[in-house]
Amino acid sequence: MQSQEPYDGLEVALPERHWAHEHEQSDLAPSAHRLETSLQEPRRKCGLPLRSFYIILGIVIIFILAAIAGGVGGGLSSKSSHNQHQEDATNSDGNNHTNGGNLTNPTSYHILPTSHLSATNWTDPDGYTHRFIFFQDGYGAIVARRWNTQNQSWTTDNLTDIFQTSRTPINPLSPSTPIASISFSYNEINNTRNKILLWYIAPDNTIASVEVQDLVDAPEEWTFKTLDGEVIETYPGSQLAAAWNRCLDICVGYWAVAYQRPGDAGINVLNGSDKSHASLAVESDRVVAGTSLALTPEVQTDGDSVARLTLMSESLLSSDSGKAQKSTYEAEWYHDGELLSGTTLPAPSTMLQFSITLLDNFRTVVFLALLPNGTVAGSYYRSHFVSIPAVDFRGGPSDLNFTAIATSEEAMFYGISNDEIHQYSVDHTDPTVFQYIDTIFP
Image (tube, rainbow, N blue to C red; front, side):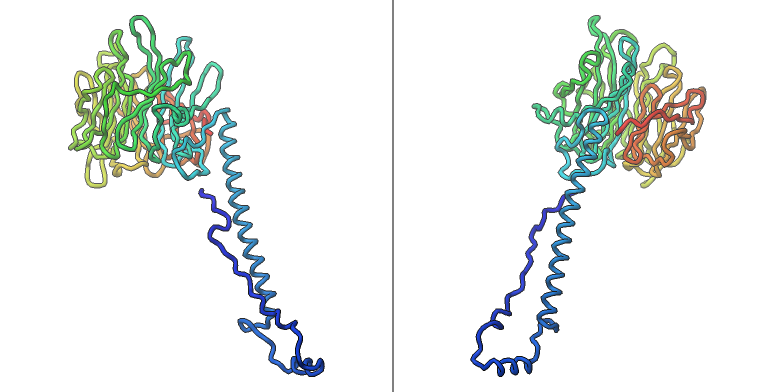
């Protein structure tokens, strides 16, 4: 909301003093002067006697000045209210997550209305669960919310602010920046690494990344990741998805990032083991430009490893509709059928979003779609596909209208609704039911 400059360009014209000559001395005798004055037509302005005119003019000026003062006061009140709004958001977790210098016009939102959402989880060496939720705040800054099961608390990192004074700042972002995140562990010469990675698409359509290199001892220390010097370009309007692809043996815990490549919008998947050679997962003629993307690891068909990747995207059915489709990677990528029971979906938009979560130790995969009407539908695979016409959200707010969704590997669902982020758990016995846990932001 822009504050108005008080009195900007406003000039108030004061009336000329026409009455001064009335008090000058006259050459007429007093009686003659009185007689002449009494016979003269009363002086008028705008059809009104002078006295009435100036009284009305004075009243109008007073009303104008009062209106201007009210506008200035309203602007100051609005600014004060906004500042208090931001203080409340800060005080809720003791951290500042205000603007980051991205959007020039502050808003009254805690969360950018067009913000995307990403979620991941990690279990530390002592068995405690940590959760990470990423989104853009009301000013467009990238914000991370961190949950620590051990101390039962949420903390906030404003990543844009963290990098603002560094040599690699997070440049101003679009109001709906695509984001994707993973957390993972791997052994490197018997030294366990615990990291988190966040990818986002910069305004020049290239992929950028930041990371925490030590989740155990320094979970708040974020650094910029250069992708080994590679510049990864994306198709304008491309979305992102990411997954940690486990290996069969000791390895670097290959991460994977899906995006639409420039030129033809085919879906590429970039692997952490070879950043200079992305693999083509879906040909351009099988996918619509701007599709939402979701990526997850899955148990191999032999049931011994979590090295398979499953990708969710939208196929091109017509100029304004499509269907959710599944692509799978084992030794190579291949088309693996339709999802959501073949339901026809509208064309890609910021309101059509996909997400995937897992149950039964990675053996049950739950595919979800946020539809443009703010509801969530999906399907899950447990020996066969079961349709979810509409997720049953139990508990929590009754007026849900989601604008963004995300899931983690531990069957946690997050959704932005009415300027809040709500957390639900997927019912393991009935995956059509999501149980409310908490409102995690603000």
